[in-house]
Every structure is written in C-alpha cells, then in structure tokens.
Image 1 (cartoon, rainbow, N blue to C red):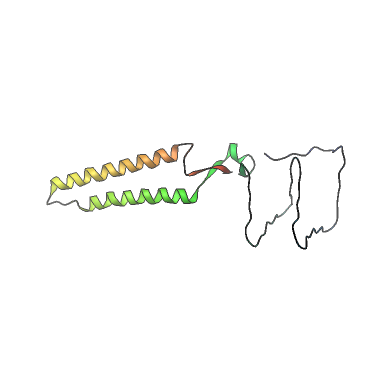
Image 2 (image 1 turned 30 degrees about the horizontal axis):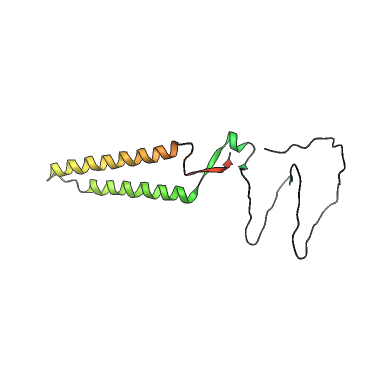
Length: 146
C-alpha cells in the first residue's frame, strides 16, 4: 500500500529546503525512522547503491502499485529451475523410449510408444498441476509485480 500523507499537515514538522542536501556519517550509519512511512521521491531517479548488498526485509514486497492484488507473484528461480530440469529429464526419457521404435519389431515398438506416451502424460499432468496450484512451490509468497 502506498502511504498517502495528509495535507495540510497540522503538527510539528521540520522542512529543509536547499539546492542540495547531503547527510554523511563518517564512521557508522544513518538511520531514518517514521511511524507511518519513510518515503523517497524524485521526479527522475532514485538510486540505491551498496558495495556489498541491498537488503529488503518485510512481509510483502510489491514492485508496482497494488502489485499483490492487481499483479502476480514472481517465480522462485532455483525452485523453477529444479522443476524444469525434472520436466526435461522425464521428457528426454520419453524421447529415448521413442528412439527405440523400429519397423522390424512392432510389438516392442508399440510398447515403447505406449510407455513414452504415458511418461509424457504423467509429467505434463504433474507440472500442470504444480503451475495451476495457487500455493505452488514455484511462486513467491511475498514478492509481487505488475
């Protein structure tokens, strides 16, 4: 949810206005706290730069206004990659069965075709159920985009 401040504000406040404002801590950190919100706003760009990492730690991360309700969850990369690898391995196994099809041995070939068809069907059903499930293991529970 985007915090919407009330104007005009009735209460104590501090306003700094200048062509440039610099806050610098020589040896430790700078902390900004707000009971309702801390907002960064710019007509052009907001930069977050860090030598080691940028950490965002909260229950819900929305990339875009109302992304949780109007957008969609992000895909979890490692989990998706594992599921895609399983899918591809099983499709490759079905392909190996189909590669054994031969005109000279029709009985065995029909068995290979039937087994390959069953493997493809089973895997498509498994992955389809996984993707359609709203509690899917491949979708983020706290990061949404739109």
